[in-house]
Image: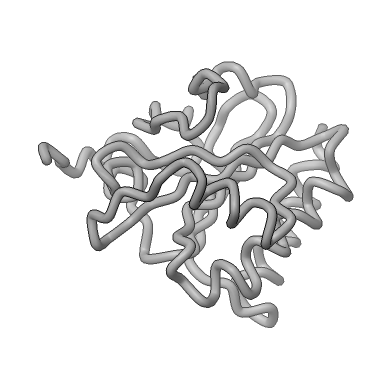
Length: 160
């Protein structure tokens, strides 16, 4: 693994740097520029993380249902243990947790996680419709991280 931290990839008020993700299914890996025109919510998560599966994924699903016209949501599965999951494992988890957004694998298990300065999983990154980084927060506590994130999402969507 040749992961290196490139802190320039994430700076509030600047365009979000490129991610390094891999496809899981047949869909091509999108570029950040593909999402311009709508806000973008990125969930960096792991299926081994209780807060991710218990609170973050349901919150992301709700954002898809409530804001699909104004916001894209994607998930980047990171893996601290360096275990590569089979494609069917991902499909089973998508079905089990009713995931309604596209998910991709982090390159070398945690490259984007490191480059985006994630504090752990789940970690959220919010980008406005111009591709400008607006918010980054770690956690899934409904009375802290998710509440703050919700406020920021509404601020961003009200600007659009």
